[in-house]
Length: 294
Ligand SMILES: Nc1ncnc2c1ncn2[C@@H]1O[C@H](COP(=O)(O)OP(=O)(O)O)[C@@H](O)[C@H]1O
Ligand SMILES: CC(=O)N[C@@H](CCC(=O)OP(=O)(O)O)C(=O)O
Image 1: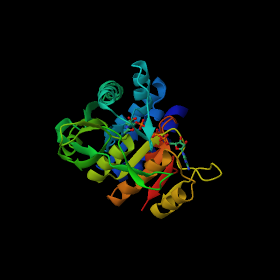
Image 2 (image 1 turned 60 degrees about the vertical axis):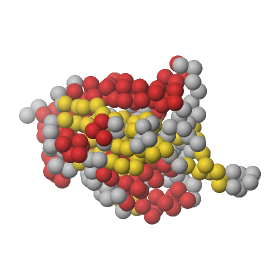
Image 3 (image 1 turned 120 degrees about the horizontal axis):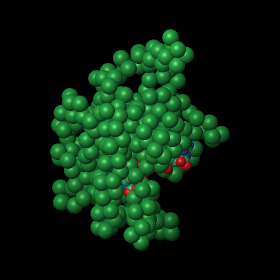
Image 4 (image 1 turned 45 degrees about the vertical axis):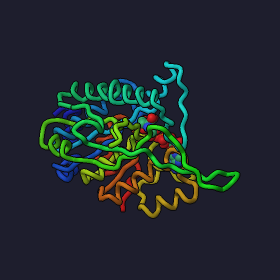
């Protein structure tokens, strides 16, 4: 046996018990816009997803694309504005969000997975009546008057209904769903949904065995910048309360907590900029990021 063949055999032997543990289980992978790097990274991500399917695991990809939406808006002369980590989305903006998310980014990921010999299918919340959203109800406390005010974020939505019929059908097929976080409202509007929130709702609806959030940091870091390998829901809440977890990591960890409360068995935040992060997390003993457990 050559060295390389021996190495592959060793890797396979290490991965086998994990593959068996996840067999026929659903793993939701949230692929964040910041985690989408160059072609090499994109191909490695697609290969990981293809390998999961080939191993009898049922992957569902939910993707973001915040930086890519920002770049397209800038090209059209529209400035991006965020409130509490959410993009303020007027009618013109939601049209561009849908174009970028459900159009170019979605099809790019589908093509990458298909190039690995699999059958990916690009969807958004509108397809198969999968997700219905309502206008997000966010409030803030006015620092001068201390009065609680409602934030009007325009067409920013929260998923309120998830129908898993189409996802169940795809799970039994050769298809890998790749889903953009855009959904209709019962009011006929199109809503822009934060991709973490959307992935958490999908993971809860399908009772996923794992939900992975690929971002551009190694996971949740402690005050000294060291990776925390495992966190309980109570510990995660304490880190938000004492300010160790801040900025964009707050809604991400809150989404993880909600997903666990909805029955997802384990949620992981990890660095998508590491080659084969998904396989390293799921199929090796040490994992790759921060595992949040009940
Ligand atoms: N304790 C923490 N551990 C890790 N990242 C943190 C922490 N507190 C704040 N952050 C910030 O959260 C960011 C990740 O959130 P965000 O940028 O919204 O991710 P994404 O765009 O990939 O969804 C990190 O880049 C980091 O700046
Ligand atoms: C309401 C809201 O903020 N929606 C996000 C949707 C994309 C997203 O969340 O992408 P990332 O995961 O790459 O950040 C946005 O418009 O940027």
